[in-house]
Length: 542
Image (cartoon, rainbow, N blue to C red; front, top):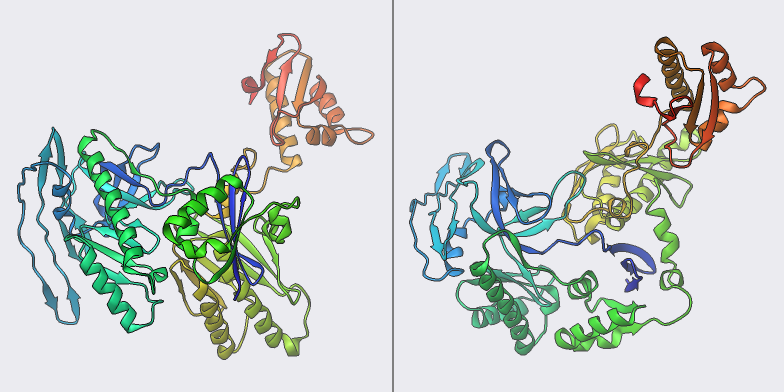
């Protein structure tokens, strides 16, 4: 599989496309009015604790409080904040740690010690955790803690945060105050894993852990040590900021999108990186000179007159990511619907088929749909609960075949996904890890007319509303001249025909109405203006 990274920068946005065998597979977009927050580290303050949903809300200095689920709380956190402050005073709330095993159901009951630390009039209360099925955490309002963003805000929900801090580098992810050393599963060599683990134990100071990334395979001690040391330096700077902070604030901001994609996804598997911005080209090559000089020869500054996304046929594919209907190779198609709770894929054959080959055609279309759905989930970055309505298949073997094919197609996805077997009605349930806003949320805004429903009131319904207004007006007012302001679309509807709808209204309610078209009025709204009083009287008679 040939993989390329193509970066397009304009005054208003940066777009990064990842192609696989010439087809668009993933898309990242950075917009100036939608600041990227994934990976950022904040000093936060607890504002609310809602025990019945196992969560707390944290003020991190943004417009909306962050969401902290108790499962995202590091159980070893009581050992961490004491390092951030000078001469902390400690008060142990609990020292009990128990491990119980119940027959038939293993239950871990950990009560971790809590500490209250104070320095320079700053208080940090470390909370205790207790797990017995439901998660219960002893938190108090106004407590301060360090958190990292793990999911962007979407819809009406704020960002999601964790207290398990991870600072990503080129070869490793540093885990402050953890003794765990993890190694990428994609490194298959036992000897290489052993070597990397030994290096980590040798280089990392006590109290630090890390996750060793796939690109670290075969790298020298010097390269790995440089990465570790730079990340430890970042953590030391974060600790200094905590000491000086007196309110929720940003402690660490992750790299800009383009550089972070190069850091995380530019591996030996990638054949080329094309960049059409001299500024970004310089930033990325400078980073690679420091992090991975061997990859510099794969980076190219694109300078042709044809726009870079047109050159690589990405723009055409991008148009489909904004549409509800996605064609399939054999004539079928997908319909994608977004709701607050889930995203629904509806698979359609798109043509009439003979009864005797219906099962065969359904299987073929469903297999094509599975491949395209897996691609669309990555491309649009759709997360949360996904429901797929496949074409009905009577045979269990065929339903099983589609399920296995869909699971296999999802293996390229870096996000965590779970696929459930098809039901007898050929409904498939999928969950996909939500980290970023999906493309639709980033690239569109809620329609001010339909308020996101995708539909507006019909012209006939609006005409009925106007008539009810006139009836109320005539019952309470003796004026005879009005000006009606409506959108051009509604004005045409009111005045069309030999005896127009407007004429019928004027005769029925004995009033003279002059219609004025206005581009500033929504298609489902109207305004009545009194000629006599020279003012808007719409609200008086609604």
